[in-house]
Image (cartoon, rainbow, N blue to C red; front, side):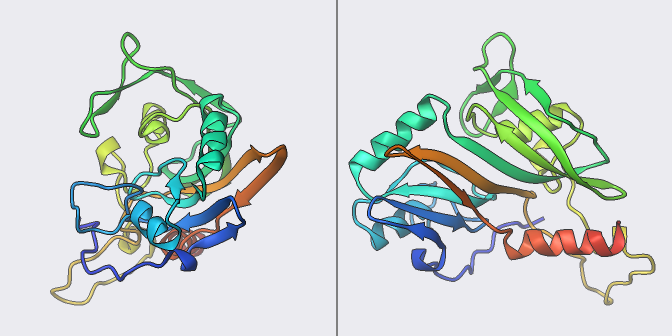
Length: 245
């Protein structure tokens, strides 16, 4: 499955902004774009786009390339340091939505399993050498074959939500690295037929993980920001409502 759209149009930060003041920019990050510089130096990323919008912009945290959702960008060094300290002391409250395979009833389900990052996106559970990783899960919507869950990571390890869900045998839809499978309309819609000689494409061409909201304290004020689903996530949910309810 080819998840990368190499003909992606140029993105302007102004089209992504949820909130902006003199210190902070909050955006709804699109899927399939890196947060920082990746291997391909010619490819767009959020850091470069932010710099072109505001020269002192600094990314306060990163999301996986395929993950969409709320992201904080500081407009000055003081704000960056303040938010970095909030993350370091685990005072930032983050909520993600993920669509997972199977029907799972999670009620403040705690996964406390250490994660080892060996580089090159090689991440695994390792009780002996891994770093502390804690995530809470709550089911928020059920379909016949899938569950929409809210994920609250307390720590911020690479691939944390994805790995922790995989340990629960609840892999994120489309997350092939952790045994998640894409969803095709032919799986859901009875009698669905594809046009002759045409290969069926998955409803969503990435894994179904979205950073829904974030709560921080900045300059003594509690601030909460929420990002709506992008089109591909919303379409997948709509198809499940229609054919897998």
